[in-house]
Length: 348
Image 1 (cartoon, rainbow, N blue to C red):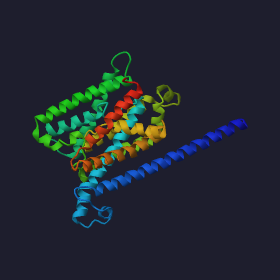
Image 2: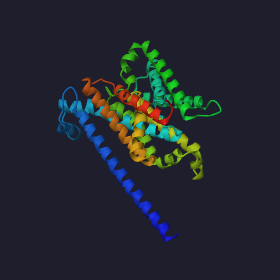
Image 3: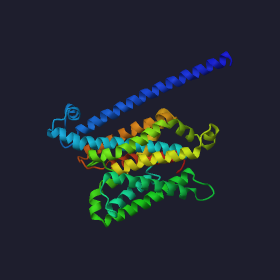
Image 4: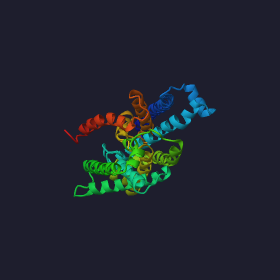
């Protein structure tokens, strides 16, 4: 290797290291913002609680009313938002990487609707009331919806193109949402129990519900972070993946398992919150580029921050503790989707 070549390689390495340092600093700042917003959210409610009392309730619980409100009502709600937001953000990033489709997300491809439909069946028809059991129905519904969407999009000679995946996902999501609504109309008891949940809500989340779902979401997030280099390679296309010795079929299968863990867990905990998996990965991509080694951790932190912030703003601006975070996300996500679709050239 010539001296000039070695010097060029050294310069490129230094530039890459500097870029990674900037990205790491941005990720640290994002995590700090997420933590601050989470603490701020716990202080807000029908009665404000000082931040010092919030910290005391966590580290020195004494049984007072304020401490009970923090530990039994507000903290589980915030933890549910953090987990659901991180899960949906990462699930969307993985789906966009695997399908090479900038419009892919758990909501648009019917995964959220499938999980929600399965949970409503469990509650309305089978009479399952356990939150820990609902998780398994959500996983099954998410997996079934993913398979059906891919099968529908694969029909024809062109195969599963990005546009066909979105169209199949929207059709299936609309169909399953209609069935879910019809079931709830004829089952008033279940409707009362899941009315807010079906809109995507953190209202009434308990520590037991968070504890039941957290292991699955954390497992999915851990796997996504562990294998983000392989997901990066997969996002470059099948030919590139094969050229470096990767088995695309195996890694796509693992990616589907991770998405099911994340989306199924998030839906069972907070309902079918839309647009998080679409908006967050794109913001991450605009911030750190197309490297999924960075997009995935940014999507986790950004999704958690966005959901908690949306929930906090919704219940603060509308003065309602039961205001669904899914509504707030729809107000933000719908205009973003229209802009993104136009930018991608899918609509004119």
